[in-house]
Structures are given as structure tokens and as C-alpha cells.
Amino acid sequence: MENATSRTKRREFDIMKLLMADHEVALCDEDRRSELYVRFKGPKETPYEGGTWKVHVELPEGYPYKSPSICFVNRMYHPNVDETTGTVCLDVINQLWSPMFNLINIFEVFLPQLLTYPNPSDPMNADAAALHMRDPHTYNARVSPCSMTSSQFEL
Image (tube, rainbow, N blue to C red):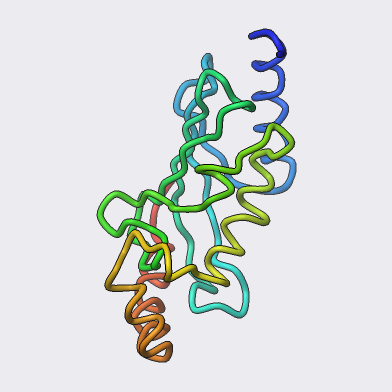
């Protein structure tokens, strides 16, 4: 297992890669670098396209061996996101995390896939899950205003 210095370097490297990939990032604590906000844009060809969300990321002491906690700060209507807390239910973050993954994976692969292909059979928002399965058109219409109003915030 890596020592604390190696984990710190990995944390800094992952944050740097996120910045170099043109993601807007705001560190909450410059010294510890364990808490940050990232501006996340909705994936193309989804009802979330055009929307922007502020995502809170907390890197635990054991990162990258322990997964980061991820939650949407502004409103997100989605079967796998708690509408009140913004907590994300995503297997790859919650149960299947590996030190091979990094922050880029979260913002360029995992979250876009979750928004493109919701998993209504494992919901955190039962109302959104039921609507997604029963009436996708109405679900998409309900998501759109959420994604439009979410674009007005500061990191």
C-alpha cells in the first residue's frame, strides 16, 4: 500500500488533470486539497444538455484507495440522485471503486453515463424513477427546466 506522501501526490495529480482537461474547479482548502467544487455540464443529446451543475467532491484520507463522495449542490432531477441532498447513487463510486479510477473518469465517463442511462431499478429518487419508466416524455420535460435554471451559479 502506498504511503501518505504518495496518496497526496496522486490527489494533486488528479486535481491537476481535471484542471488541464478544462474543467472549472474551485478548491475549498488550498492546503489539504481534499474538498473541491467542479462545474459539470450536462451531456449532449440528453435532457440535461445545456445545463450546468455545481458538484461537491470530497476526497477521503485514503484516496485513491477509497472513493470520493460526490453530490450535486444545485437541484438535479434524476432517478439516481437524491433530490434533497444531491447524493449520487453510482455503483462505480459507491461499491466498485478502484485506485485505477480518477476524477477525470468521474466527470468525463461515470456521471455522463449515469445521466444518459439512468438506472431506475436502483433509485434514490423514487418519483423520478417511476416517471422515467412510466412516461419518458414527461420525465424529459421535467428535467429540462431543472437543467436550464442550474446554469446560473458561481463556483
